[in-house]
Image 1 (cartoon, rainbow, N blue to C red):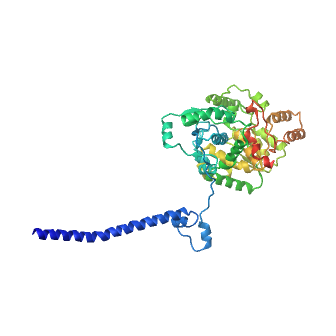
Image 2: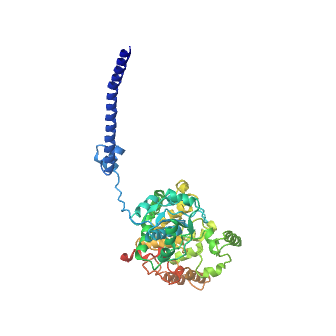
Image 3: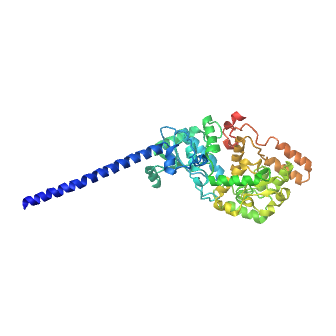
Amino acid sequence: MGIKNGGEGRAEKAKGSIVSRPLVKLWIIRATSSLLLWTCLVQLTALGGTWGPRLLKGWPSCSSQDTARTAPARVFLPPKRVYANNGYLMVSCNGGLNQMRAAICDMVAIARYLNFTLIVPELDKTSFWADPSEFQDIFDIDHFITSLRDEIRILKELPPRLKRRVELGRIHTMAPISWSDISYYQNKILPLVKRYKVVHLNRTDARLANNGLPLEIQKLRCRVNFSSLRFTPQIEELGRRVLRLLRQNGPFLVLHLRYEMDMLAFSGCTQGCSNEEVDELTRMRYAYPWWKEKIINSDFKRKDGLCPLTPEETALTLKALDIDRNIQIYIAAGEIYGGQRRMASLAAAYPKLVRKETLLDPSDLGYFQNHSSQMAALDYLVSLESDIFVPTYDGNMAKVVEGHRRYLGFKKTILLDRKLLVDLIDQYNGESLSWDEFSSAVKEVHSDRMGTHTKRLVIPDRPKEEDYFYANPEECFQSSA
């Protein structure tokens, strides 16, 4: 029995061995085939522009037309810049859209010059406009990063280890000194970044000088502003739609009419306002503690040319400059303080007043409602392409659009001399000047203020009084001058 059982055991083992060998071979063949197929797939994918996309995305049809339509677009990226990273720079921009736009350009230039890795800037959400938009809600973030990869490394967020340190509050935060040249950042900020690995600049407006900077820095500021800071596809497409609607009715002028409630409250300019409106604007000025100037004499400020023109003053000015009554005027602004009452004289002089809200359906703007920076981006695009651009106050949008229009070929931009204008308007209203005398004087004052090529004003030791770099970035179009 023992012999029999042993024989049966060996027979069973032999049987199992006979059954298992083919299975093992089958699994080996399958594994080898899978490995070969995977290797082929990786190789095909690596070919990129030819067979890989076809294998992954589907074969094209037999017609050459279909092949042309489905062929993937080739994207040529600039080479990555190789450098020794000195640390990470985080920035929190402050102010409205164009104040932040200029600041982003400055921060890129600083990071490039000092070999910092820049984290995508954080936009202001606490200013008067309280816009919750993130960077990627306004600007094409991927284009921003890839278009500058030959200059600077930009990340959407910090690496995990450093991100955790920031979350625990272990980060050096500061506001740089305004109007500083690059030596300040080299001597003060660079050592801090090397020491802490990450430095957070919590205010970025006007932190880099207008003048006295290396040419490569000035040109990089322009490259960022005019090429890398592209708006999102949604904003760009809506801007093109507004432009088509305007163009189909002929030439148009963009009037940046800075007569919104916050502008008047901040500046203290109350020309033409009722007593109740003056009180309302004063209360608003005191409600914002970071608006430092509280007691303001509106008449004195106006005579010094420090107030935005009123709608009434604007109407007289445009008529004196012989702006065609039938031209379309696109109002690039928020809600005008005083509403239709204050706009009546301008509407009577120029009946073809339009706004984005009158050109588009409410559904078109629904996505942008309560996002003032996104609405401002739309106005920015229309302002760039207008036949004439007229700002009534020299705020950030007026300055940045002025500079961008210079860069695009010195497009006509009427830069109003408010101090002389209000004096001429008062003389005309007081009947000490006839209409012809008034109109002639207005034209003479503005004959050389049309956005043509001019040398940027430099005032050593008084950078705030200099011409603003972004209004006249002359280094960036010297060859076309």
